[in-house]
Structures are given as structure tokens and as C-alpha cells.
Length: 127
Length: 334
Image (cartoon, rainbow over all chains, first blue to last red; front, side, top):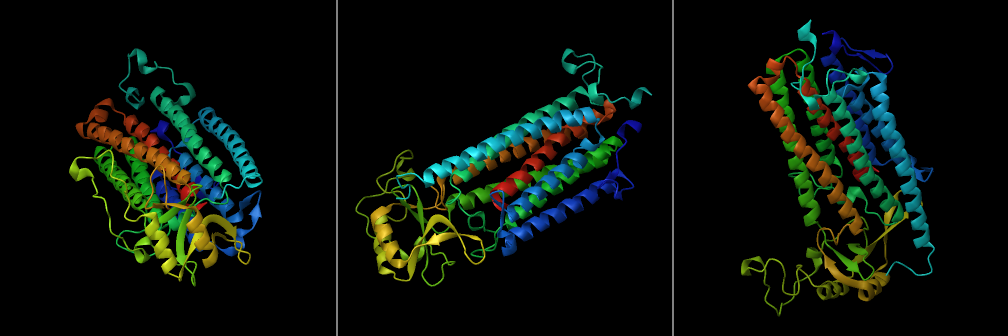
């Protein structure tokens, strides 16, 4: 059994589960709560979150951050990344995160540039 | 202690990776991780392209709440997001049964592994079915719209309540047709005789003139000065009459790869492509799960003394869930 030892702490040791099965249910509850918060915010769309930060509404920032939180717990606890050696973890996660951030940054900047060109063009595109 | 070593059925095979276990992971598991990494990059390529197009048309992208607002058995009720939230829960649920199967596998509990694998497969099928229902709603559309010469979409709303949409079937009367419609039943499936939709553009224009309580909503997104929320620009009745007469080109019902009654055709293209590609992953995941499920039933892993295959297919299944979390955010929430 030694090779299947699981790390049973989440939230940096704040919550410690007794068994792996218990941890699975705990993570499910956490993911469900996050999803319910997302859906509730998406349904209500509080006006207070319509302000903008870095070209995105606060509401959208909250959605993106909550998504990353969910992605973390799916990868770390459902896919057992928490139990892998750090070398494997870094090889997979850092590579992906670096390339994805790079791609997104380039494409979004370019998309915004084209929007500006269309908007300020001499010819109207609305006909 | 021989039994404690995970066996994968590849011992002695040239392609099995040998006995070395770099990073403490077996060959198969590590390759699954790197496959997932490359697949994650593929999906992020798609989603980043979606973000590119959205930033390019930031002022006229459809509002997801208005597009996906159906729920089974609730006809005509505006229920944005509930259905897709349900789908998310179904997929997270099947992820949980999968990880429970992996856990039971570590305890060599064949009965539990097969039960949880079965539940996972059922969850996967329900999800794929839900996606088909979502597609059907999207393709059929609800209100219908008019496409302009510039490829933009004009939708119809009440003059006194801009939030209240008006469907084409509520005010347009179908006039006489002077041509006979030829279609599938005449053996002609690849071409049609002149008009395809229910209404012609002339009928819509005439009906619009005859109904003073209806006006036009454009694709243009504006910011509500009071709340800061994004809304679609609604034209006054006079502006709408001129706009429809001058620019109205074709009637659009539903969505496909070339036209889309909800707004930019690109939105439909990305929707079909990304959710389709994800649905394809779910479907193949279900198929792989089935293979492993039968192997569990046959006792293959019992004989191998290791349920590592369940773990590997579990990784793939969780990855499908992981992608859905992002698709959910970027298509339905943001």
C-alpha cells in the first residue's frame, strides 16, 4: 500500500481528511460550491461588478479566477497531481501554463488591435 | 514483495518502456500526462482563437444568456445557464465516480471498480446527450432574425419593452408561393428551389411596416449608463424602418456555419467547433471507459495484480472534465 500513499491535506493543511475517499467527497463539495457561486453570479450579474480592470469586467475576472481554482483542484486531487513527484508536476504544469499564457497574451492583444482598426477605419463596417 | 510492484502487462515488450521509472511514474502514466499536456495546448489554441475573435468583435458579440436559455420541459421560460450548470454537475459527478473507481482499484476491489466505472460511463452518456440537446436548440433557433448586407443581424423587440423579443412567427404572415417547393421528398437533397426558409425578406419587411409596436435590436453592444451592464442597441421605430428597408437582405432562422440568428456567425462556428471537439473527447472517453470496464469485468487487472489502466483512463476522463470547466467559463459565463 505504501506506493499508493495519498496526501490528504487541502487548503495548505487547513483541511485534513482521514481517507482518500473522504477527500474525494470533500473536493466534490468544494467544486460544487464554487460552481454554484459562478452560476449565481452569472444569473444575477450584480451591477457592482460591472466596473473594469485591465479591459475586463470584475465579474469576468471573478469567473476566470474561480475557473482556475476549480482546474487546480481537479488536477491536484482528482488527477492526483498532488501525489506525483515535483519533477513530473513541473514538467506538465509549467510547460502548459507558460505556453498558454504566451498564446493568450499574443492573440488577445492582436484581436484588440484589429478591433481598433475596424472601429477607427474610414469605411464603416456597419451596413 | 513482488506483488506490490505495479505491473502493466507490458513487461518484456520492446514498446513497454522497460523497467526504469523516471519521476516515479510508469511509462504509460507518464505518456498519458504528456498526451494530456499536448491536448490541453490544442484546446487552449481553440479557446485563445475564440478570445481573439471576441476581442476583434468585442462590441457585437452575442450575449450567452440570451442564446442558451432553454431548459428541458420548461417551454418559453427564460432559464439562462441552468441547463449548462446541470451539465457541469453531471460531468463533475462522473469525474467523482471515476476517481472513486481509481481508489477502489488501489484496494484491488473488483466489485467497486466495476460499479463506479459503470456509473462514470452512464454519466458520460448523459453528458453527450445533453450536449446534443443543446446543439439542437441552438441550430433550430427561437425567434428568427434578419441579416443585413454587411452580414450583421437585426432582431425584433417590442417598442414599449426592449427586453421582450418578438419572433418572426408572431408577426409575419406567410404569403402565397408561386413556385413549388422541391426538397428531400422529391429526391433533391443537395439543392432547393429558390427559397428555403419559412419567410421571404419581403414578407418580413411588409409585416414590420404593418406592426408599429415592433422595433429592431442590432448586434451592437452598448453600456447601460446607469448599471454599466452590456446591452444590445435598440433602434427607434423610425430608424428601424429605414435600416430594414435599406440593409435587410435575408431571413435567418436558427444557426449554422454560415448564418446565425443570435449574432456574429463566428460565434456559431466556434460554438460548434469547440463544444463539438469537446463532445468528441467525451464520446471517445466513454468508449475507452467501456473497454476498460469490460476488462475489469473479465478480471484482466485482477490477474495483472494492478488496476493501473483504470488510473490512466481516469486521467483522460478528468482531463475532459477539466476542459469543460474552461469551455463553461468562456462560452457561458464571461
